[in-house]
Image 1 (tube, one colour):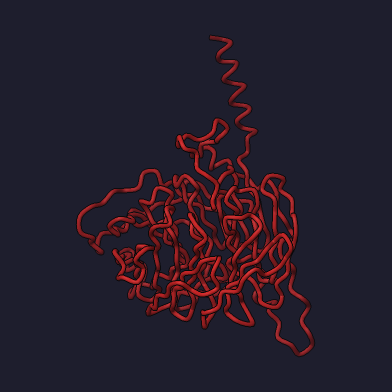
Image 2 (cartoon, helix red, strand yellow; image 1 turned 180 degrees about the vertical axis):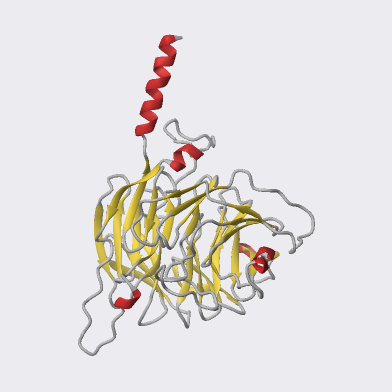
Length: 401
């Protein structure tokens, strides 16, 4: 089970409140150069992927307490790091099945993850002794979306076989199945009561009640951005790579592979904001040409909320980390009008310091720390040196008064 919340709802005395100033002071405190094994040299006459550039980390996950972070990469390894000491703890290999989309369960020693070869089974893995505890079979094609329930041992997967399956860690058979017209992307809300399914090529987001998932969705949201027609006609389709609810449940962040992410009202489905000011991650390199139809990049974790939902952090193909302020989102009510353009929001800050494309960006659930990943891994902390100067000035002011 997840750790108990503070019953008073008050943060502990040592809690740092995230603010515009603090977010702009984030700097890479440690960069792990060897976070991904390099490409092996090409065999004579064999196919080489070197033209695609270096291998990348494709997914990162924190445990519930924010003590540890786990990465999965194209070199078919898990790497476990301590967030408190900033040290690499261990490397585990999954050369037979490949590894993608690792997700910590509510125990900090076990994860579920998708496979990239051999078959499309989801595996329940113990990091403690490097053993598989359970296999979850059912998907006929690669799993592209995987999320663990925030409240219990349930989890949910979406696959290229156009199905969503609901599972329980204690039972190897699937306990629910949704058939969809296209490959889905899934997300739970923070209560675990509601889950969302995005359907690409149809630009729909379906919201289901967890207890009545076999019934029709209680809300169907159409994601249509009228400002795209100003760029090209016909407008380039939106390709959704991730979904995540804000911690207060009011908003849904829609991560996309192109040059914009979106924020929706979770109760009625209004399109509220368009997050701009970065380079989309569908290409492997900046100098690669863009495809006609949008595609998913090699990771779908390029954008996420901070734990308090005041900010959204996102990666970019040029390596910069964009921070968008979400504290003054517009409010809309009444019937949804798809012709009303969203509020366009530019980043509060574009942080430099990540080497190469920043494919995965996640904020620690408990600590004032951000992790970014691509060909290398970076831990970001607020630079407190400026704060010390401000404290000294304040003390001098008090003395003179």
